[in-house]
Every structure is written in structure tokens, then in C-alpha cells.
Image (cartoon, rainbow, N blue to C red; front, side, top):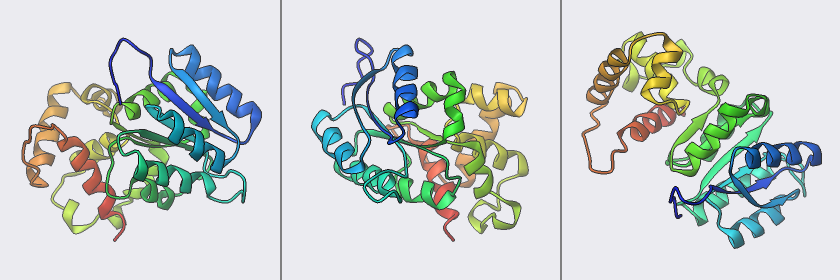
Length: 225
């Protein structure tokens, strides 16, 4: 994927509801993204996305031909066949299992947003762009369900309540600035907590700079137990 700032982020959109699909396309286009193709059927979406190879695909879970989880299956297949491409699932299903199926063992370039998120145009387009560039974006509702106190696994038990809150907000895809704004703490405090999280989860520094993704992935995978 060519992530050069000289060209817009290229997007394929899969949604069988015509009005919603047109709305998503309009929102993305108004934000400066280039919608290169759209489809109302999961099989067609898979075909055109493999042909156009965009930076990111925005896909509904429930699509024809079977109106089940056809869109999710297409999203998972696209992540397998074009690993450098981002995939954002846009859905009304607030089921963490769907999100975990999408993420699998790789949080980079994955997004799972509830459809009401489209109502916040800035947050939605920001999430799509972030995923297109290898980041992650999880709806806060999904993240909240993943980290109920009774389900905190042993691997995360070393983290303080504040560190868990920082990790939860990090899982939503927020930057340090976004975490500070959400939790009403200073940037310096966020940096301190993030450093502590990396240390406690034994995530050593590496050239790729993917420790944040590794921490989020650790958080996701422990929720399967």
C-alpha cells in the first residue's frame, strides 16, 4: 500500500442498505478519501476489493447472499489475502466475538465500529484513516464488554486500575493525546502509564515501534480465555 501523503486514502465500501452505503460514501468523499468501488453483496465486495486493492475496506457484517455474517467472512478473507490493507467492519452487532474473529492474531489494520459511529463524522473518518495506515479502531462499547472486572485475566492482573483504563482506551485506537483527553489526565501521566504497561507486559522496544499494537493484541487475545 502506497501511504504517500500526496494522494488520498483509497476505499472500497460494502453495504447492502443503499441509503446507508451512499451516506458512508459521501462522508468519506467529503473528508478527502477516494471511494474507488462499492458493493451491496459480500461476494461482489470480495471480487472488487481484490481487483482494486485499496488502502482500506469498510464492510457491513450482515450482507447478501445469505444475510448472515457474510460481510465478516469477506473481511477476514481480505485480511488473509491482502494483509497490508486495512479493514473496518461497520455494524450494528455489539458482539465482542465478532471483533475478536476479525482481529484474530493481528490488531494492525483492523477496525470494528458500531453504525451509530457514522453519526460522529470526524471520529468515523479519523478511524478509517487510522486503520488504512496500519492502526486499529475498536468501538468503546465493544472494548467495555471485553474488560469487565470479573474477566480480567491473570496476565493483566499486574496492571493497576488506571493502567487498565489506559490500555482499554489504547485499544480503541486513541493516541496518547486522545487517551489524556478521554481520561482527563495529563500527557505526561499517560506516557508514564504506557511505559509501565509495556514493562509489566514485558514488551521490549523494537525498531518497528509496534509495542502499542502488541499491548492491544495482548489485551484482545487474553479475552478469549
